[in-house]
Amino acid sequence: AQKVTQAQTEISVVEKEDVTLDCVYETRDTTYYLFWYKQPPSGELVFLIRRNSFDEQNEISGRYSWNFQKSTSSFNFTITASQVVDSAVYFCALSEARYMRFGAGTRLTVKP
Amino acid sequence: ETGVTQTPRHLVMGMTNKKSLKCEQHLGHNAMYWYKQSAKKPLELMFVYNFKEQTENNSVPSRFSPECPNSSHLFLHLHTLQPEDSALYLCASSQEFGDFYGYTFGSGTRLTVV
Image 1 (cartoon, helix red, strand yellow):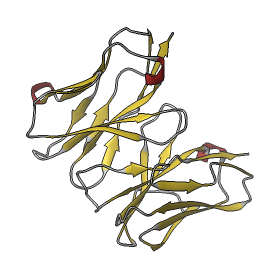
Image 2 (cartoon, one colour; image 1 turned 90 degrees about the horizontal axis):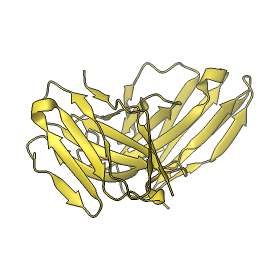
Image 3 (cartoon, chains in turn brown, green; image 1 turned 120 degrees about the vertical axis):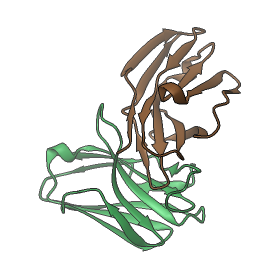
């Protein structure tokens, strides 16, 4: 069975601080995909990134970066120079060619 | 506008009521999903439909009854719910079942059972 753990339930930072959201996953498959979604107060989950299990190259998109390490089964998400608009719940998810399993989410609050 | 539309956005119902949640997508996707989001818990997959056929029922109580008349529409019929069923119900779609490219989510229906 697959499992996704986001150990940080809530994080609060002050604007312009860097913040890292942790995600650890469990799977027996060699082929799988990992995702991060953002859920703003409006409710819908907004897709941020997808990585496949064969590509451990880290990725940067503006202020967002992702660190995928198969050796530790982790897929962490860093926001650099956080902004108030980054306040949301962030979900990590794992897909093994059936359906996606989500972590419990991390609520990030960025204070001005 | 996300591409997946859910109505109503908010619903309050008594335990003896019958109501339905609606989900609609015009993205050309063939798979649709219902998820339940309770406070401080992982999103729970409830049902999966692929080409209008139900492929997954994740041990959901019979008081939740899904319906998928076509690939663009998905309903969740509710009857004799319990207060613990209060949650955000999210609909999602993907190009195919088992799609590695991720899902598109609606904004959800916030359900309160009184």
